[in-house]
Amino acid sequence: MEISRHWRLQQQRYGLLGEKCNHCGEKLFPPRDVCPECTQDSQELYRFSGKGEVYSYSKVFDPPAGYEGTAPYTMALVKLEEGPLVTAQLTDVDNDIVEIGMLVEMVTRKLREDGNRGMLVYGYKFRPRLK
Amino acid sequence: MSTIQDVFVIGTGQTAVGEHWGISLRHLAWKAVKQALESSGLERPDAIFVGNILAPRISQQHNLGTLLADFCGFRGVEAITVEASGASGGAAVRQAMLALRSGEIGTALVVGVEKMTDKVGPEVTAALAAGADSDWELVQGVTAPAMAALIMRRYMHDYGVHRDEFSDFALNAHYNAQANVDAMFRNGLDLKQYVQAGIVASPVNIFDGAPDADGAAALVLSSEPGELRPGLSVRVASSSLVTHTLALHDRRDVLSFEAARLSAERAFQQAGITPDQIDLAELYDRFSIYAVLSLEACGFARRGEGWRLARNSGVGRNGQLPISTFGGLTARGNPGGATGVYQMVEVTRQLAGMAQDNQVAGAKWGLAQCLGSSGATAVTHILDGTNRN
Image (cartoon, rainbow over all chains, first blue to last red; front, top):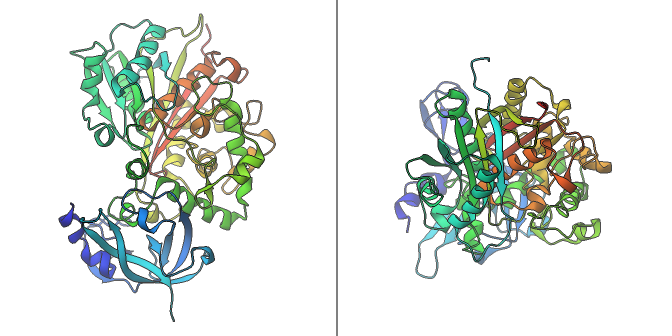
């Protein structure tokens, strides 16, 4: 059980809450204490729109423990409109029609489960953009 | 640079890579250590550096430094474990190099050991994936092959390369492994088998990826030259470890292994040679796309063109740049934290003319490079076999 570990990231996992660097303006997701661009440590919260496009993807047939239930699933690097890449699964889509450049939007879904009585971990996935 | 102490490889040892069901981690390590010590003539090293990734998770065993020092008969000797995901073996060599170059120790034993088959299936897949960023990659369900696949897909897209163009890397590795008695896959591979192979994480198929298995390799390093064969010593001409972003999504450019590029650049600078002088390279071909990006990062090929080097046997033993000369990770196998040490053993044996049927004729300069966490950590060593007395 890793309840606190997942709980403390709820703002990021459910709402794509990242940061904007007060020094160089870089938008950061996931949030960091030190801006990787200018190495300064002052940031303000910044909520990402959740819109982006598929930068790369892979259909995964050999899942790690905790993810067997949904395999095969499609992992993607999603390029957010605001700049950063995020690693996430695609959902609500036929795995075989995914392509680079496909427009997607963030939704909240179950990420993993630890057995029948274990914790469920929720977070962001991306689906084809509805409008 | 004259104040830096020279370092030589004076002994090598390794076990077969495979599923060693009947033997435990410590016994596996001892097999390689015994060989290395015997070949070097050294009785007791000043310090021991152990490369390992998964023992705390799979064997429920921390502190391999002390375990192995004790088990191998070296109570009282300084020993630690070095972990840097897939680069752990190279990182252990790097720590030994720092200690030797400083002059504080005169001899070092480096042991890479991995025992991963005590668990199987999704648990091992999860353990191996944990080199990725746990909070932001792992939780999403990534695996090591999936990370490679994300890079490979984008590479194919940006440079217009068909997936079958990657086959030459697997074919070369499997060909070379046939003559390596310590390799895991020794049956060879043909194009038809490659093209028809099952997909692990599209577009990565089972032959694009290395088999993860048990193994141990050991090196004895010394500040005094030792003869591996009469009249022949091998010097470690350079040693460099570089880090970059742990998470793939944090890279501005996912198609460039920046850590590998910088590490190779520094290694070439230290050795005072250029990429065209390298006679063979053991690169981190855990996935064929990694071989491609490593070739580009080390300056053996231009950006977007690493895949072309493998055409027409260009990376074969008689090619422009032999790689994976004993099968590489792809066919020798990938024993996790031992892999970087196997690479050093292999390059040493090539330069010492001890590679038997795998020998690259007249090899004088060799490069070994290993990577951790999808190229986030890179360790490069260049070995010098020109010192024939």
